[in-house]
Image (cartoon, rainbow, N blue to C red; front, side, top):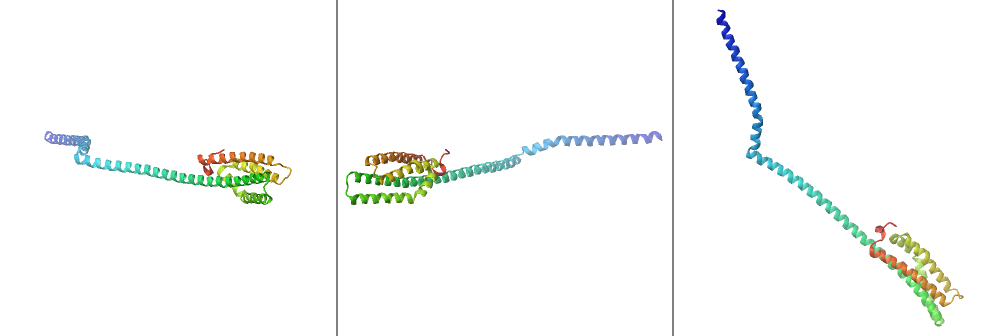
Length: 225
């Protein structure tokens, strides 16, 4: 009886052990086959097409975004350049208008002073001398009426150095000529020499302003001293 009961138990144990072993082998095979399954999925034509489509759409979006950013920067840069160019042209135009106004007033005053001296030296009749003296006084009044505006405009568009030239040597010369025209002890020759010296200063001043206008070195675009 003892030998009969032992053998079935041993067989049952062997069967269980074999089944457990087979189960573990199946699990191992399944684990080993997972990468192969994924490779098969990735290698499938439909999967490749889908992945290519997704990647292509992403790359298209990326490069379109980059292109738009670059175009926007170029547009902004172009707009800024055009705005600065228009502003520079406006500054040049206003500076040239200032140059013309100041230069015209200086030339008018200087010419009428010279004309008055010539009339006196040539022995013109008193009426003609009085007429030229009146014309000279009108030029003096016109200059004085716009003096502060001219000084501030010259400083605004051409700088403090140019204002200093106008307010200093040139204005001093104008006042000296004006005083000597009333001084009977000053000869016509002395007055002509004084006027010629002043004319040279005014010419140099005009030339400097005109060169600054031509180079665009005016107003807010003027180079730092």
